[in-house]
Length: 217
Image (cartoon, rainbow, N blue to C red):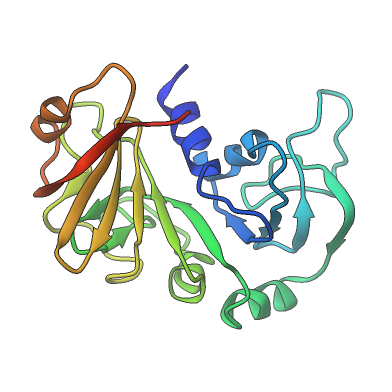
């Protein structure tokens, strides 16, 4: 199981029955394939879909149906599609219970940078700015370290922020952390890793929960 799948599976564990959940571009959209059995979640795509389901099988996709990243989706019974004006009215109106968004980096204050690296063209942050302030709970999903081994969970973000102090939970391929008033609390580590190993590869200051668990995936 690669890191992306680990993150997507763990994101899905945060969804509770009856929630309206928005899935962002990249890894978060993969979480649609791993919803817990028996949990009824209404998935929302910012480009205009409500109550979509897992990725369709090859040859069964509808070119008119796609998620926020343009990948094919299925629609469940009772689903609806609509224009982006209505989609963002749902988001800005506070009707999204939880959102999971990809990130370039996060920090221990709950800041998130997920749209721009200076010097590299970026078309804009898109719906992230609305979701980060409109959703009731924000999950940041990202690899724990970059290709050089540098931590992407930081004391302070260095890249331009998408929003400040908005993240509630950080989920990486190595750990799950909660942002609290006291700091960033390590609550889970990935299978095969120890708390000390996670601390060693993390730039942020971590508060270690008294009952750190193995990540459920």
